[in-house]
Length: 181
Image (cartoon, rainbow, N blue to C red; front, side, top):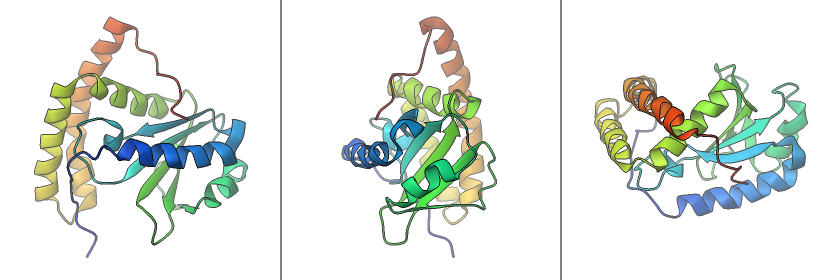
């Protein structure tokens, strides 16, 4: 049976865990990483989440993977060749290490910008964070052992938030904040 989906209260140590990892990534990747950002729920203050640090590394081109794979591997991560999302290259922690997802995306791509906008919008709209958190708890109860069901179930609330985030970009002239590392 797959690991259960468990949502935990926001942990103020999550940004520190990201910064520690990001410093190592910056050191081994150098200028290959145009941006290194903390994304996902653990990057949003007050957002209860699965305790998984999500890192987005932006690169000029996804291929060849060899330009960055060995560097990321040197920090204890392995490349998931079987990831079906062709807009990124995906790395996971080796067994026994803290759960971490590394998403390598092309700099300036729509998926890269989507992750940054979602994060930045929620960081400035705590009322939306609470709506998202409630949906995650409801879905975690419903899909406790069904990760695809949980992920698919988040889609409608994510898109509701992104509709408002799109309006917000027009009102504020949003641009991604500087890289986190």
